[in-house]
Image 1 (cartoon, helix red, strand yellow):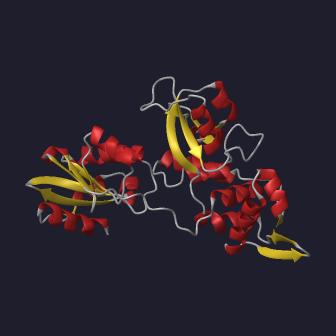
Image 2: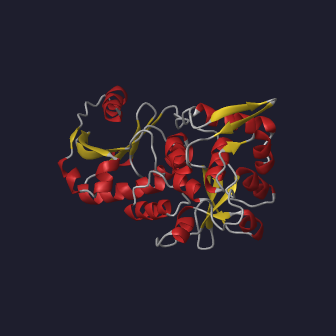
Image 3: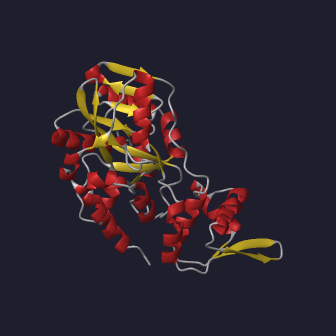
Length: 326
């Protein structure tokens, strides 16, 4: 438990016997915050604080956490300390810029109000489980689920459709076989997969094995070259499928190859968004699985927004789910 790790870390690094207690006012917070975090009261060098402990693994971005922390601070009226298992370099930098106190037990302690900034080694974010589908496998299955449903998947046809090598296509079908949703059929020298389950059951069974396709988020101004290959994503795409309002900055998705090419053409990311910029999600696979759609496909969109704590977004995702083709 991170709360116990926090107590030990404070004792080992600062010699503080900080005993964490239940925070009684946590019940006054919105339910989405009560469900998402655990809260503890403690004293650091005589200063009362609230420890807001992020769940493991973390399922929502730093921007959301900042908003949640501000909401908790308004209720607590005392400093709120963010406690998390790991932070990326740019996340640590952003928190320090905004003077938000945080602790990564065993790695870093930043308490600006107490004049403490202790940095050790930096722990990388946990890698997804090896049992999760690879990006190519995820893309192939999502395209199969949303297209005219076919119970058979042949490596040669899959490779031709997605531009994968025969080895990549064969490996992807092997992952689907290992997931227990398909059986291998042998006919002479050719092997393919046969799926007996209907699409809806396949989706429910494999969803825990899928990950968000978003590898990186950058800000940059739109160019004809980028918008030509990009698809609406995030809340911009969700707004096309529901009544949720469009975000302040349009959100687009491009593949890693498309972003690499854009960088080679001189397009530079912005450190912060401005009035002319857009949010660009760099995906682990081609976001154009549905060739005739202006947005990313609905299944990938749901995966990219999973773990949100915004009730409006959850409601819009439910609407999107009801519109799936099965």
